[in-house]
Image (cartoon, rainbow, N blue to C red; front, side):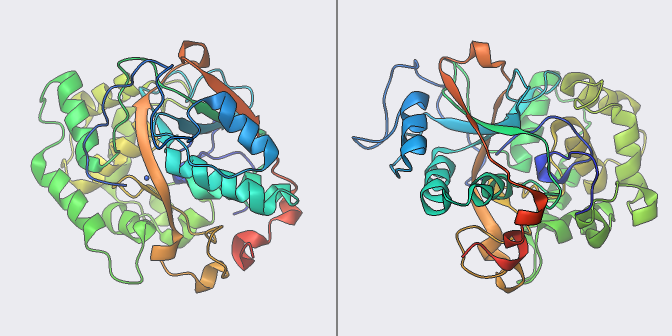
Length: 337
């Protein structure tokens, strides 16, 4: 993609921290039980330590739903940078697929490491160079994993700040409609373009969101009103609060998409329904990217969880991902097999 600086997963702008991430309607999972509880089918991996053992042995096993995964910069101390209210988390089904990647391509490490980042939804992978780890963890008691549908985000915002009228139903409806009315050859990047005006080709080439690539006024003014991203000097709470009090334009789909983009890393690859997506070749479809259908480029289930430092998690392990060299990543376009 030609970016010289790291970018987040989900098609966001230059960032130094990473994160990971899905399916289903916008309901929450039950609150996490204590970390010692096992779940899933008998014999499924239910601890981070057991997952690492399977990874190292290149074995494929079922994984219990109590385990989650997030990719992060190797120097990170939390799931997402501290300013974020929520972190994106991959599901146990994602973890199962990562074991399959490891077993299948363990002798070609770049296909494993980059394959996971692609499956999660990172853009800019042709030049990605930031050392990245996969955190596998259980949630503290009382933490809830929720499906990051658009309606979930706006319900959470109303719950946490009161119904301020900042996110009117009409804008939410038009946003959901734009993402639910895609044609057979359209994808979520097309939906992002239709809502915000930002040019699809420019986004995929790593251009900044700006008027120069067609981003509309409502989207750009929402970003400006929200203020600094939590990836820089901001934090999610202030970002959403700033939008609610400072944004004076129409509270339409573009503005609402802008505030999620700025305050919670819902970038142009975000589907709004809790399933991952990428324009690169799906690692599990044996075709070049150009020959894969839009449907085949959807990936795994994703959730949002309250952001946490690693030392607050009941249990977790970090698995270093070998990303190889950019020159080894032709499979992103030509396919993995």
